[in-house]
Image 1: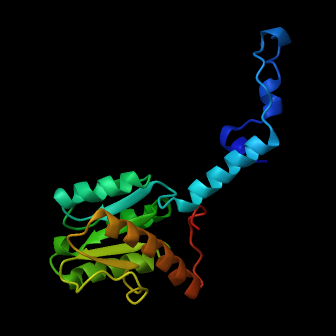
Image 2 (image 1 turned 120 degrees about the vertical axis):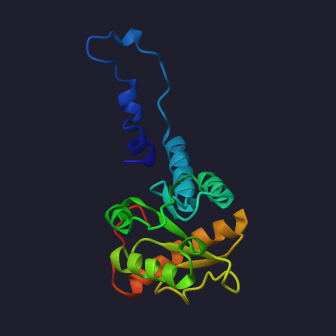
Length: 196
């Protein structure tokens, strides 16, 4: 079955079949889809899915409700996701842990939690509780962006704030890649079936 058929729950033969009790002459005469057309739609859908960052459509943000939040929300929306802001001084870690499988990644603003040590404690807790949840840490205290796996015990990517959209998108992609590497290296199954 093609992606087109799975997506729309139909195939060209079924579209052409009139409903029970409806005369065939009352059914519009749509030409059947050709295999080449279905293959083109499948190829396009596969290409678009491969480039998607937010496969589940959900990112979490632990930090203040400020102007940066609006920028993060806009960037996530441009990439096909929704950003849920958790702006309490104490992040709801148990809630995040319970819903981690539905989330594509979490962004933690280090300044919001007072110091880098407190932020790292939050990230380490999330890493242990939900190892397949990519974590991006944003801080003005770091020397620069780090998209390597050097800090993978606590996070999958680090951004120096303030950050622009291009750097944020780069961090999203790096976090997904680094988290997949982290899970593979530890023999942890990534619980999100849609994750590549």
